[in-house]
Length: 240
Image 1: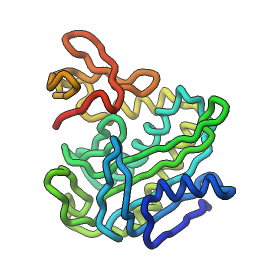
Image 2: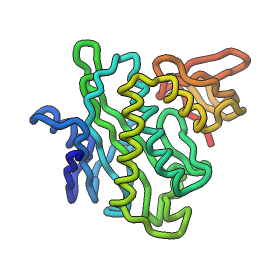
Image 3: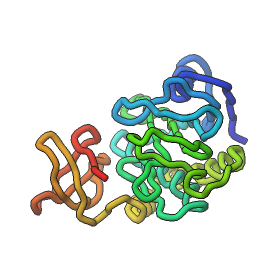
């Protein structure tokens, strides 16, 4: 059985997990779960906002021993697990590169991965997941939603956690077996606006392009003016 650490409140489950790695021997699969997170972290340095005891907030510790060049497959496996969990209950669930999960065009989950490197390998990873479950209200500027907002019913957080953990276990087993081709194929199958004309923004302003896929390091490849161009997370924004 995995080692679950339940906290009433914490600044960030990812911070707690990273500190735990530094100060003690940690079992593979150790998962930190909290009801209240005061300084949750999102992508691009943003905060992750969540009502207390209404959503799933957790960080999972893994020891993948992956090559650094394969780091993005941790993102793929994590986002596919969240996607599968939500798709069991909701329609129109998609993964927005790199690892946000949407219902329609609204964000319902986010993932933040922090890797520790040793001898050119990813020795340990902290995978933070925030999943909006029973929250009713969101700041309109966030363009967010929850399972309850979509289906007008409450969900049992413990049951949902067990479902998510089963899916995480499934996809991380694929990763540990180096089944990269299957993971990438499933990621593309569920990627938001894949192979369709979409709007983006970079330092030069807004433009239209077509997502072609990702390169070997996880950068987004966008066909722009008939030229495939690779973008890192901070170099491009996918517009709604």
